[in-house]
Length: 314
Length: 264
Image 1: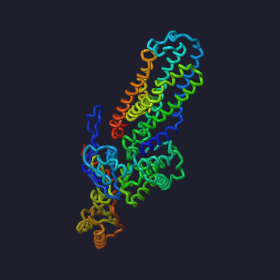
Image 2: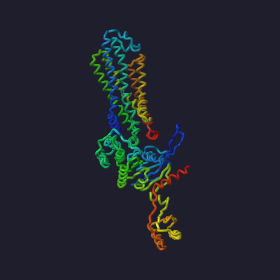
Image 3: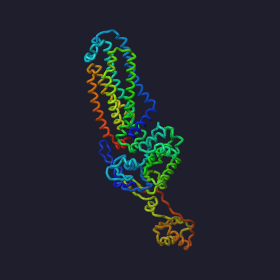
């Protein structure tokens, strides 16, 4: 659905445009059909620039990309026809009604049955009762819903969501998230930039951590495993030093650490090794109180990646 | 063409919901109609004596245009010359109000990016924005001119003055040159609108398009220029070429990327 190869964007800045600003550096990635892809990165990382390039709004300096089967730079109108975009600050025509706003975009996207599509999305996003009200009277959450409707009005195969829940209250955020989940079940491809890592973890099949260049790319679970390995904590009544060596000798155990009355064990395959470890500890006379896996959050992975990239740049 | 119609519809829906824009657009034509009618009425009563045209004391270059007329008729025609230029200013000034806001307005309301993300082409977007500004400007100008014609007939002016108002000079100026000037003003205003970040700056800069016409007006006032059919035809050809050139240049320099990324 989306395939980029060495996509690069350099802006000329300064009064005489004498300085190069590399916004996106050699981005190569592939997003499959029906996938929800999270594009994470700090402010100014180049996420919006990437979305703008992939939606045919700005030209890449170098590199190639295919979006919805169309080549970027050569078939931009077709790309625009087949993608929907929810921009970071989705503006609306404030003096016009919700219905009129959607109608304008439905016509610009050449939707065959404008009225039917407009009514469908007004109802789906709970805006039907307010369809004749001017958008200027809408709350931020309602505007965001309308912007989501606008991005979907032409039933695009691919949807680009640029910070879809930024600035929304929890209820409005949940509505947008639920809607993204619903779109996922419909099999649409979603390319989402976000700062909300919890949201990314819940919604995205894969995430790419990005700061001018792609730092890492995988599913949240795989990233966690890659960066921190899998760790299981065994809570015991007490820890005897001999038990550390005992557990360390079990196949599949990479490392054992005793912390108070807990043993933190790094494992390659906890499902396979946990029963063996528990058995060995019980046989050695340990009282195993409970066992749990340490889950590193996506936030920890993100911070680790971004900070290490910044350290590298410094 | 469907996209162009949609943009026109959108522009008008927005513009005509703002009563201040409507007020601005209608006040000026009303004033431009009332001024010459009042002037004609007043000069008709004050210069009712049949004196030869030379006694009106008008600038030298104007003498030929007044051949065979009385002083009052000649004065009225001289003054009408100034007002004709004001009538031609109308289709220049009215679209500027709409066009100056067209792109910068989309920027400030942050609707430009979603708009440019649709399959609309640059030419369709510019044509839609342009026509949305030109059409009301031309229609209001025609309407105002129509009211002026009716008003001048009702005033019972001398046949020489009436035939001057209905002469090819006026008809060419209002019906042909006016819309061409309107197109020039609109393209200029859209270009300015795409380059600035403040709607007020856009409107002020776009207003400068009126300056060449003011120069013509001053030349007429000083008696250095008499507007005749030949002048009007030359002006139509020159302005049409300028409009065509600006249209071509406008589509070349309207750069989606620059407009999106270089605006803060």
